Length: 162
Image: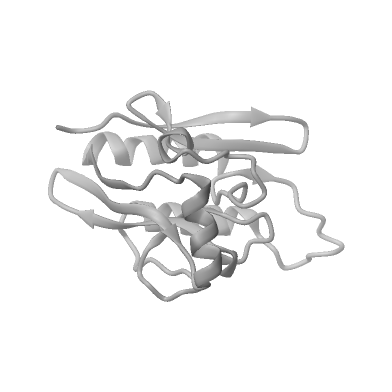
């Protein structure tokens, strides 16, 4: 059975647009039992916002976003700070993967995109125990129609990164 996949705006103000993935019309963060706006998981690579160029002259948010999309499409080797070849979905507000992330493995097939082992990833045992106590619900696998999945990202890029 294939899951329905969408990218939706979940919060918007003058400075930022926040997104989440919706799987079968339910936010992925809800599936995982996390808060999309908890500081531990509020950094999402598809979010758009203006960066203070005087403080960060070389930061290109569009480049970060496009790189994330390339990974979500399976067109580039995933990279995270753990070097585990997993794609990061949500990370700490500070942007460091070492605080712990929600990530997955991507399997690109002829007509399917499969997300496998969607779960917390971290490098600190004590933190791992804390995460278990938070009640994160891992997801074994999600399957998406490849053409519809790719079209959803194309539409996102056209609307928010052009």
